[in-house]
Structure formats: structure tokens, C-alpha cells
Length: 250
Length: 174
Image 1 (tube, one colour):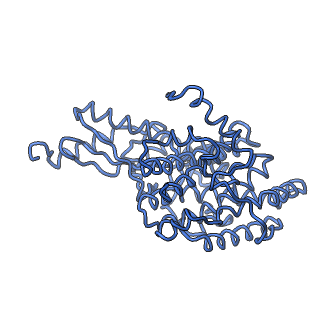
Image 2: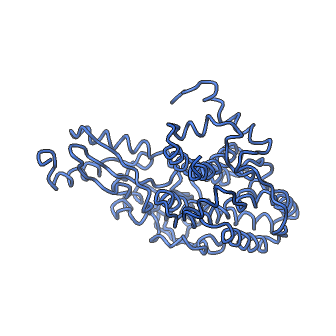
Image 3: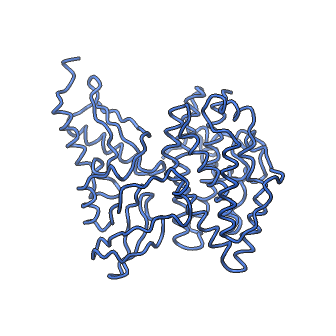
């Protein structure tokens, strides 16, 4: 596979699966404002998914459009990182997952906006405006929950610790990622990781949370199609209609 | 080619027709006033309209594309092609003054300022979120408060007026 197709699938799948996860909270948010925020973020991510997967399908040249790629690939063909498929859990779990993702996503979009591929740069330029909102909001909530009640602090710290091992996969580059760096398409891992750690440290300090060690063992495999058990259930719900009624349209 | 190319005045006419196509979510503002029509040109006998999305997931974009095509068909242009352009990314700075006034009359507070540079990290620092002076579209008071960063559509936030007590939508700077 052309490494660029693989790279685009990773971007699309990250946004797609996280969007699906957030969509499942529609109508279940802890407050009306939170409910709207979750679904707005989900909608932004879905729009970004469409841009990534459409480009991936065109470049691949096998006639697969965004819908084929989203609804007709099984778990081992999905290229999302493990963090986005982790369960919604309690609201601290949902927001810590979002904060780790948003922080990386923001710096990645900043890097991709300078991509040597003008179409990728255009998608990143569009996305970063939305991702900035996402990051500002998730950082804000981490501070409110971390520096809130004893209960909210404990839950947020527990989520921060439990999800930490999924936060580093995005910086573990394989041959696909390195090919993109070599072509000037994508930013290198080192700079992204340093920016990520600095921002998390700053927000966690304000949130009175203890940041897990930067050199901790990081889970990996999602980018290569080896997923946690959660992804199959997510796909089962997301893809049901197209699997049961192939080609169904509105 | 000469037989098919339209004179420049016709392009102005197409812009005027597009100026009558309402945004499906906020029908008091046209797609031209919203700033999402980026170019109109003729390519042979085909009218090419370039539009840019407001937010990447905005569900109104599909409806807008259909409305634009329908409107031009209704004015006798048979062949219409829509081009989606991402870059430069849409900004509320492209919204016309007429559009902003129409929003206000409709009860939606228009963007309160030119878009600040949000590409730098300062834009995502929690405490740096700008406290904007958003005027209540009902009574004009600047004594207002943000209720929610996100509202009923991707482009809006929720505010409330602390004087007349009315809640209202605010069209975010983007």
C-alpha cells in the first residue's frame, strides 16, 4: 500500500472512531451544555473524517469512497490508535481521553498545515480551527474536574493514570509515518511529543493532577490493525446498517 | 469558445442570483453574505461555483450545494458545477456587513470582532480564551455572559443577557 494512503487512513480512522464514541453520548451528557459540546466535537471530527477518507480512497484508486472505507472494513483493517477506542467510562474517562487526543491532534494539525502535500495542508488548515476549540474546552474541563471536589479529583487522576499508556502510540512512528516525514508530508515525532508533554504538564499542574511518567511503557498496535477488544463492538454498532442492508442510502 | 463565454456582466448577475439563496439554517442571511461563495466563473458552457465549508462537519453544506444548483437552474443556467475549496479556510471575517446586520435583526448576535490568530498556542491556553463584549441582539446591552461554548449549530455559542434576561445565540468568530 502507498504509505500516504495508509497515513490518510490513520487520520481518518482516528477521527471516525472518536466521533462515533462521542456520538454515543448524545442525549446522555451530564449537562445540556456538555451534551451539545460532545455532539459538536463529534460532528467536527466526522467532517474531518470525510475529508481524510475521501482523499485516501481517491489516492488508493480502487473505487472505494468514504462510505466504503468507514462502513465496510473490519477491525483488523482499521488504522486508528488504541486511545480512541477506549470506553467512554465515566465523564473523567471521556474527558481525559479527549484531552490527550486533542493535545496531540492540535500539534499534529499545526504540523500538517505546513505539509508538502497541498491537499493535506488544506485539510489541516481547516481542521485546526475546530481542533483549537476542542483543546481549549477539554483543557478547561480537566482543570475544573482535577481542581474540583475530592471525588472529581480522584476520578480524574484515576482516568489520567489509566489512559496514559494509550497516549504515546501516536508518537511511535513506523515505516509508514517515517516515509511521510521523509517526504515532508508529516511532522516528525520528537517535536510533537515535546509539545504534547509540555502542554499536558501545564494543564495538569493547574488541575492539581499528578502527571504520569513520560517514559512509561506505551501500548501500541492500533496503527497496524491490532486493536483492543473494544473496537469490534464499536464497529458492530456503527456498521450494522450497511452490513445488514448493503448499499442502503437515505 | 467565444460563442459560449459570457460577458463579465453575466458573472455579476450570477452573484446577484446567489445573493438570493438563503443559508438553510439561518435563512435571513444569504450564502454570499455568509462568505462561503468564493468564486463564480464560466468554463465553456458550464457555470462553476466555488464554495468553502464553514465547519468541516456542517450538515448544511450539502443542502447549500443543492440550493445553489437549483437556484441557478431556475434562472436558466443548465450546467452548474460546484467546486469545494478548503484553503484558505473560511473565516467569519468574510461575512458581509449586511449579513451581520441581518443576523442581529434575527436575534443572533453577529461575530464580535475580527478573527484573532488562533494558530498559535496562546489560542488554546485555557485562561487566554478571550472575554468578548458580545452585545445582546434584543436590548443591545453589553452586560452578557457565555452560557455554552457550543450551541444548536457548529457556528454558534450560547449567551444570556444579564439585563433583559433573554438567552440568545452568538455567531462565533471563526
